[in-house]
Image 1 (cartoon, rainbow, N blue to C red):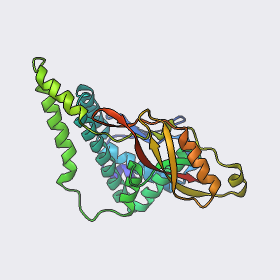
Image 2 (image 1 turned 30 degrees about the horizontal axis):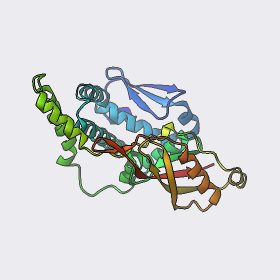
Image 3 (image 1 turned 135 degrees about the horizontal axis):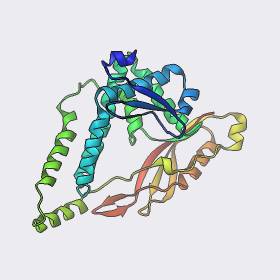
Length: 282
């Protein structure tokens, strides 16, 4: 039904895969939507339908092919720091547009927002980790769906695409003889400050406290933690308690075992504070 609604003439396949964190679309001529087996058995049908609508939006826009071209540009211009920032912004906007198309097709933006929230919960098997609303693409997507901005999509969304095109042209225009220019580019790269990358999938699953588990206590704790230049976590503090001390302390213990990619200033790793939420759910 949604395939017809999106005007997709090609047949879109559907496959259930065991080891997969979230739904993903592969292929262009014969697109296939891969769905984690855990979602089929653990997510309500109406929420799973919302996630599939999001993937069909990617098929409608040929995003798989666009992503291949984008990845090729990243490979050619890997040395250019602006390319990575612009490319990230393009991917973020791509997800936002797919969300908007899916929400429009469903007629229920909140249903898609709830589906994204449930997806994150299932990824961590009943107790999971998610970046806070001011520092994570997923939380930003949910916020957009629940409280959409009044400003319509305009020329600002095209800035990342234009920037990537400019960077590509600049990279193609370089010649081996331009030694001085390459030196200046290296200095410019060193002057760029980057934020730490919190890759939570590298963390072990948090241990649900036995006492809270016995009492079937649930809650959400908001932390902030310090990522050191070597990527380790040295400090953490509770910004908002879950209401249960054992859940708060278990979240702090879990985050201390993680290792992240530190941020940089002038090319050197620097310590930084990052917000995070633990959602404990039985």
